[in-house]
Length: 186
Image (cartoon, rainbow, N blue to C red; front, side):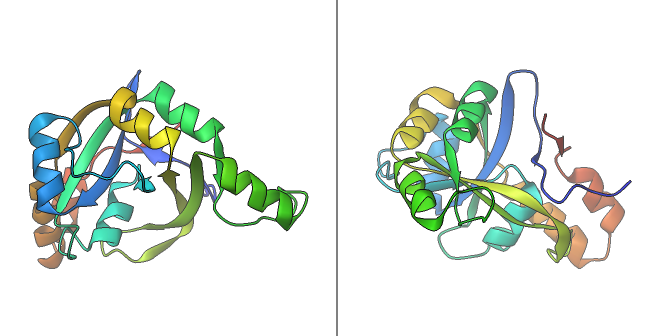
C-alpha cells in the first residue's frame, strides 16, 4: 500500500498526542524536571512542534546540534493539538488552496499556528518520498500550549543517543524496535 503524500504520523492515546522539541539543556532539563517550560522559555516567539520522532532527530542531529542537545517528548491534549490545526495557516502559499497570495499573507499574519510539511526521514535521516507535519505555534497558541495543553514533558535524549548508536553500528532492527510507535493520526 502506498504511503499518502501528507499525513500526520504520531504516537498518541485517546486524549493525548506526543510531539517533540529540542532545546539547550538550560531550557530542556528544567522543563523535563518540572513538567512545564521554565521562565527562560520565550513565549513571545514561534515554537515548532513535531509529531515525528525521526524528523526531530533530523532537525537536531540526534541531539548534537548547538542549542538542541536536549530532546523533549511533550505530551499534549489532543483537543489542544486539534485546536491548533483548526486555527492554522499553511506556512507557504499554495495555489488552489488560497484564492491569491495576498489573501494567504493576511491569513498567515492572523493565524496563531502554521502548518509546514517536510520530508519524513528514515533511520539514516535520509528523506522519504512523503511528508510529515511541523506545526508552528505563536501568540495565543504558544500560551495555550504551555499553560493548558501540556500534560507531561519527558527528556528523551538518552533514547535518541541509544538509537543513534545502534544506527551507527548497523543494528537497524534493534534501533527500529526502540522508535516511538507512530501511526497515522485520525
